[in-house]
Image (cartoon, rainbow, N blue to C red; front, side, top):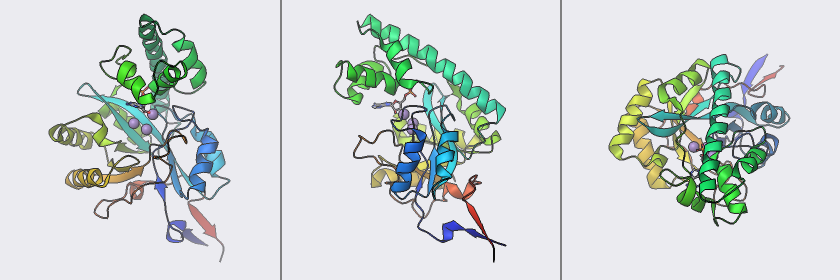
Length: 298
Ligand code: AMP
Ligand code: MN
Ligand code: MN
Ligand code: MN
């Protein structure tokens, strides 16, 4: 019996950050995995906001295709009163503290949605709560659902405008949700067998000094990775984050943050390569799929 690790046999393409209908993605977990596979992705992590609900369906599909699926999540967390996103890769979704946390987060998100809808009503925009509940279905309600609602009712003409005018921080329908502390979120991930990765480090509007403070605290709390390559980063940004990864000895992740096929400039698996100086985060992962190690009789 010989184990052939198929990483040596084909060109690898990783995408370790994307969303399905279990949160604010447009595609079902099945359609997402199929699209990733069509795009040549060989290892995909499904990382829905605060939920692992889409993983079972994604795995059922991945098992029929030649693609590795990593169990993932994108946890909302708070640090110094800022909202951050922590990606968990390789988690056991059945680990009780994590499963309990996601259940609690669903309630938190439902309560926040009711408050956002109330604020919209004060702006004479009615019916948002029912609409976002219907749109999210069993999945997590996010501000993206509100943005879609505002678009569909012609209150705004782009998603971005919905955030700029209503949903963003400091805007009339903004509600400050209470998320777990960053260190707690990292513990949920690592105790569930996963690797904690700081998502899109340049999207928090932090100065370089604040980013360094954040990365020191993140590392101190047990964080192991940083998203170096995302779907939106240009070469200068990748260089900047590479510097942070090296300085704080964090492994590098790559992820498109794909949400919707209607967005032409952001596609599953369409990512710049991870710079050589950064340790790939997948070297830290225990792969969970049956397709990872192909056992061949000789
Ligand atoms: P939530 O976690 O419910 O606060 O929603 C956050 C989600 O809204 C993010 O994951 C993005 O998908 C989306 N989002 C946040 N800010 C913007 C923005 N300025 N424009 C478009 N989408 C955004
Ligand atoms: Mn999102
Ligand atoms: Mn995010
Ligand atoms: Mn995301």
